[in-house]
Image (cartoon, rainbow, N blue to C red; front, side, top):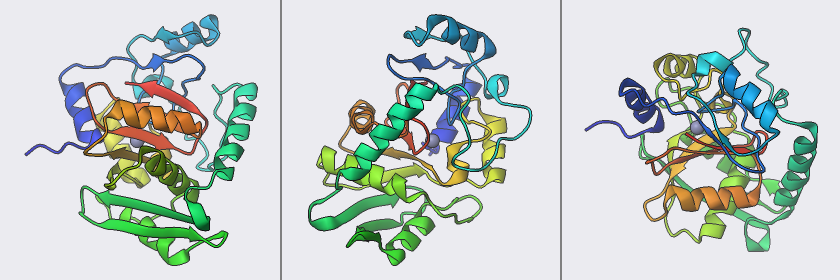
Amino acid sequence: MECSCLLCLAARATALGDRRGPRITKDFDVVPGDGPVLSRRGLFALAGAAGAAALVAPATAEAATPATPRSASPAAPEPRTRPQDQAQAQARGQQARRQPAARGGVRRLWITNIHTGESFNGVYWQGGRHVPAGLRQLNVLLRDHRSGAIARIDPRLFDLLSQMQARLRLREPFQIVSGFRSPETNFQLYMQSSGVAENSFHTRGMAVDITTRSRSSGQLVRVARGIRYGGVGSYRGQRYIHVDTGPVRTWVY
Ligand SMILES: [Zn+2]
């Protein structure tokens, strides 16, 4: 049976010649973070359209990726994000952080890794602080399953997933299609598919690709966008979406 993870599907789509570019949606900037990126032609069009909705010409990761690696710092600037959008994103992020993920000062998460079968269903935040044992389990669960590398996952990602789970009233776990990727793994995938960014947020422990059995990707996207925290990417014809704790933006690939 062929693997159904995002990366394998993206690689197969590329092999089939499906190289459609990203859709720029109203009210959001599209920046290279993970998945689709813009060609130089697309960037000029974006600048001219001043953020208006547009469908950009076919793009490749290579076309818009800087020749020199960007800083691995989560605070690395996103050159195509406007300052006013960053301020708005920050305000939204603060708003999102103020919203409790669950009553009683407890934040829960239920996720399972489709590659390893491992699950976490428990509390990762309680009494005003993170639960170290919970974070350790989550870091292991979201490891690079190809290399076995474990990274510290940005805890804000758990807050985002927890809020999504609560808003969706899910009675099932989020299925993790892709969590942390070591730079080596990401580079291999980047070389195989135009749908993988060279400096993906996955390599910084700031992104996951998720799906569920009971909700469509459209439902997941609507909820994730409603929280207005980080990036939200979806893929035509696929049930999984990408979410990260980078700048607020969205795309359809
Ligand atoms: Zn992703």
